[in-house]
Amino acid sequence: MPRQIATLIYCLIIFWLFRINKDSEAKTSRALWLPFVWVAIAMSREVSQWLGMFGLGFGSGRLTPDFYLEGSPIDRFLSLGLTIFAIIVLAHRQGRVGTLLRANKPIILFFSYCAISIIWSDYPDVAFKRWIKAVGDLAMVLVVLTEIDPLVAIRRLFARIGFILLPLSLLFIKYYPEIGRSYSNFLGQAVYVGVTTNKNALGMITMLLGIACLWSFLRAREERRQTQESGPMIAQGILLGIVIWLFVMANSATSLSCFLMASVFLLAVHLYRFARKPVAAHIFALAVVVLSVIALFFNSGGELVGTLGRESTLTGRTDIWKLVLSMSGSPLFGTGFESFWLGHRLAKVWNVYRFHLNESHNGYLEVYVNLGWIGIVMLALLLVTGYQNLYAAFRRDPSAASLKLTFFVITMVYNLTEAAYRVTNPIWIVFILTAIAIPQIPTPEESPPIRIRKAKTSDQVPAQSESVLARETREESFETL
Image (tube, rainbow, N blue to C red):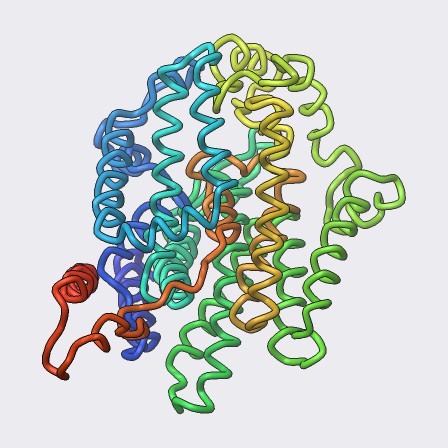
């Protein structure tokens, strides 16, 4: 089939998926498109890379260590613009934002320490720019979680991204090999990358979108009994088929194993009553973490790793870890926020690994070399408090909380072999999204009119009450912009 006709067909399919998945009762603001753009870019390629692929002169040339010091002005201005717009949205939702931040002090503490660590970075200007991007990650998450119904917003966000990135990955692999494929530096064999830049990234977004897709499919299956609408279930079912096909193409062992473990838990929670008991959350989290650690780091797990087509050195990761540790800075403070893979350290690594390695392939090691043991302690605090928040949510509503709990545990496991606790990394964004506690914030419709009952007649409203209602009305009117 000619690629032009295939492109038209895929575009029609994407439009059709959006249409049949539409839920008229689910309400989200137009501001949700901000995190959609942000996360979609994080899950695919930077804008400068897309422009370079279409011959507009950006992103070309030989890659050098200095590139990571300079960066792309196009990407920088775009991320800054999106961050500013997100902050404007949050300013109109200051009541809900304040409630969220007060309930999540460990997040504020972690980001504050990251800002302080810029002081001892060898490249404070670069570290500062990356910290601004990290603030953008947090701002986008807050935009999602301050929607009237955060669960609906999360569901709609991942659905929109999945409807675009997954079919496009399939289209690029089949009909645009110059975009959807690359070649291995070791064997020269073709590898499939889709809308991303490497096969591991394709596996990662397939895993994340696949988990969200399976959860949405199961929720749509439950809701169909009341709404009698099968469109969302059909749309998510088609995406699941694409997810399976992309997993075969990506050949990413870490992502595939995480997706399989997540699928077992989601299916159990939605299909079996015993899996909805609070103790099931503990069993799932403990089993996934323990099994993954044994399979990866102990000799008894060598056969488990082998079943995924990987060697005992985890495709050379253990050698990378030794090299990174030999160049690590202060054990207590690290090298500064996002500063390890810069300058002379990056040049030294590239002298050993010619395929331009720029990560340690372990998220916890990545935090250590950048932020030291203090950063590790703060990350541990995020993990502990985040899990406590999710466990409490699971006790209230297992079906709704199962997605966030699954995401949270899978991000922990994924970082055992990939460095994903990094700025604008989709795993990091999902981790923040799931770790933040969402207190019960009453909507204006739920807020009891306490002051109004003080009026002598039904049509008399005190001035103070009127100002409260006016402020809430302004916030709600902004949601429709």
